[in-house]
Length: 102
Image 1: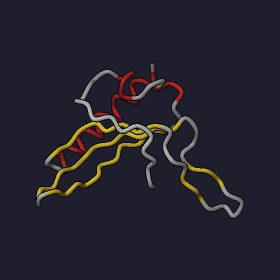
Image 2: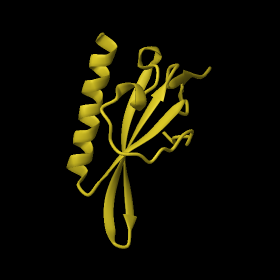
Image 3: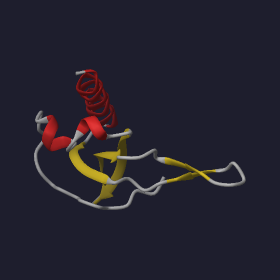
Image 4: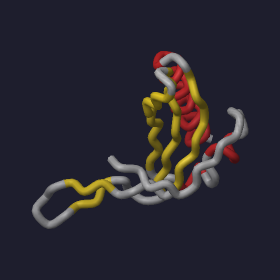
């Protein structure tokens, strides 16, 4: 999936769910993506959250799946460890599940 950069916001991590994903109840899908960023021989892992207000997969006549660009993207953190970046994703999914169950 090639994300469309709709809003790239560089700000510190926050537990404010409303800031992380506006209108969380109306979202159809969310995704957490870890992107590798190599600069000056240093490897960093950027964590991005993506969200869709409609299904992220569109049906096409031949039955093949076509991915839909995210409606919303948010830069969340930069880590030096892939494991820490994945922990950010896990935490994000747990928060979103709690938000949807409200």
